[in-house]
Amino acid sequence: MLISGKEKRIGVLVSGGGTNLQALIDAEKEGRLGKGKIHLVISSKPGVYALQRAERSGIEAMVIARTDYESISDYSEALADALIGKNIDLVVLAGFLTIIDEKMYDKFQGRIINVHPSLIPSFCGKGYYGLHVHEAALEKGVKISGATVHIVTPECDGGPIIMQKAVEVKEEDTPQTLQRRIMEEAEWKILPEAVRLFCDDKIIIKNNKAYIKGD
Image 1 (tube, one colour):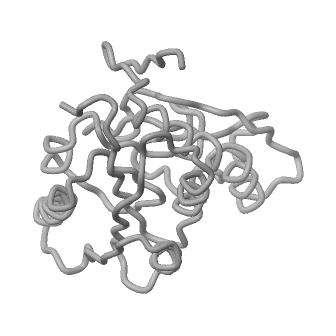
Image 2 (cartoon, one colour):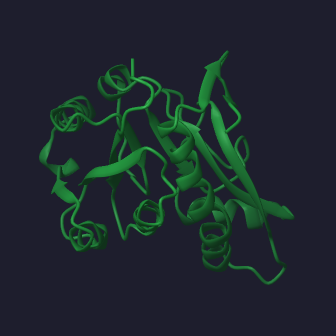
């Protein structure tokens, strides 16, 4: 159990450019992560721009490459060991496109959060990642989409929802323009706020639902 009132050490997992990581870094600098502080960034790929973002901000960063491990189980164990070794309290998946298994879920139960670029339960689950989400939304002709921050569980995109924010879908949208608008108007806003709520002990999970205590 986490001890209420203490600083929460955050580990951020990335696979690419790190725009959501940057949103978290900016929020921390502005005092918007509450008791949270980013102590570690782990990338599943070498050479990605997210690592430069971490370095520029003085955050420890490492690469644990998925390609170096034969199985998801071995990879998940390596991730968990690295995070535990740095006494990480909260794991944030910020554009992390690698599958993890129960070796992570068990060791960080209720302490892994993810941002997904749709309003779950729409356009989520297996196969819905990156531009595929926005392609599906446009193909369906939805009028609003958005982003969701949720607790990660073994069920893909099925964990308790912490926050959601809707974004208008425009007739002229492409998957790329919709992706950008959802990042700017939703993901970069609700992910730091959800992290703050967790780090300030404001989230209660009951019956697979997340409830927010008043500030």
